[in-house]
Length: 247
Image (cartoon, rainbow, N blue to C red; front, side, top):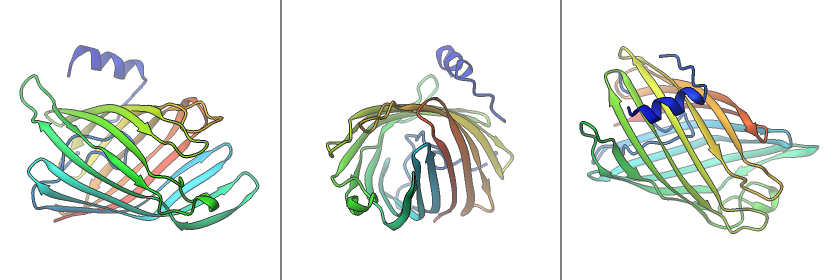
């Protein structure tokens, strides 16, 4: 890891708790460039939440499905049930917006070079925007992610832009960086700093610290968990819990 990255991580306050199949992406907000292996599947059943001063959004139960359609190329799908509430408004639940994407790794990791990939995604307006369960229009996320590993340690991060033309919404930048460590063959723990600009009119954006990990029950099944809170900008309390299968 470069000296610059080390300094940035320390300055961000990531006092990390130093697992052996390491998963990247979920349960964190920061993603990675590693696609599912060619002709392999992975699935997550999960729930996540974002609690703010104005209310909350919970996605769950939700399903994420990824498939290695080509070498270094992954197809991606997320279908959530969504609940929104708080702020004196009764909670409502229903189908949320559907996420589709393609992850492509164009550079493999070598000595001195991290692996690098792109992961463009579209958020399709399958949720009822009139009830607060969706955006009302398709919107897009266009990130670049990179990763490097040494021994039991892995670090990855990057960022990009979100493009959202729905009424009251904004385009915004986002990015994050994560460091995690494997403890034997069962447990991985790590932490991230993640930030994004204002996503809607009246918001300021935020930066958050998030900590979590993975417990590998066996080579095909894992538990994932994380929790975090903003350290700057708008108030956000974040959490994730999921079950993971691969085959």
